[in-house]
Length: 156
Image (cartoon, rainbow, N blue to C red; front, side):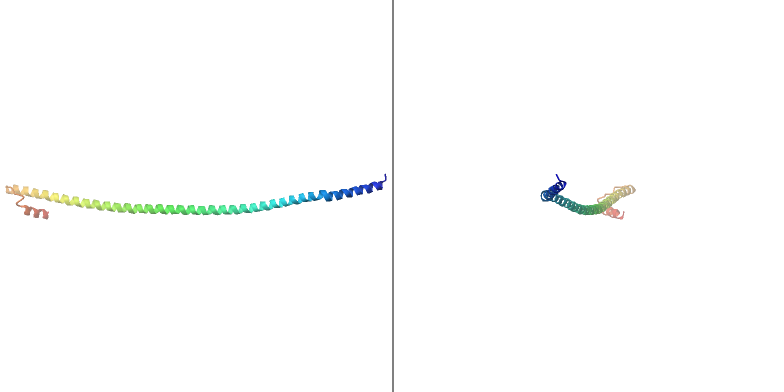
């Protein structure tokens, strides 16, 4: 066989192979590569979106944490103010009760003092009558001399 004919025949077979590859093999390969590139770009875009959503979610969480901390601080301050006002109210009630008890005690003491003075006056009057009886050596009738004894009590 002739080398030229072999080369020509190989060139034709090569051309058929190139045409067959370009027509039937190359399009599915390029289509698969394009699909893969599209999937990769979609995946990268989704990753970027997820990253930005994660950053946004982190910001929201931080904001919520800050607002929760602020609210907790505010509630603690409110509770502290309420406790302070309750303590002040209790102090006010206690001092009012103490003043009431003190006034009652002073009143009771004044009544006891008045009663003791009256009892002492009666005893002094009885002693004065007994003393007068012994001085006069006769019996002094308290009923007869009631006016005199009442004036004596008033002077004492």
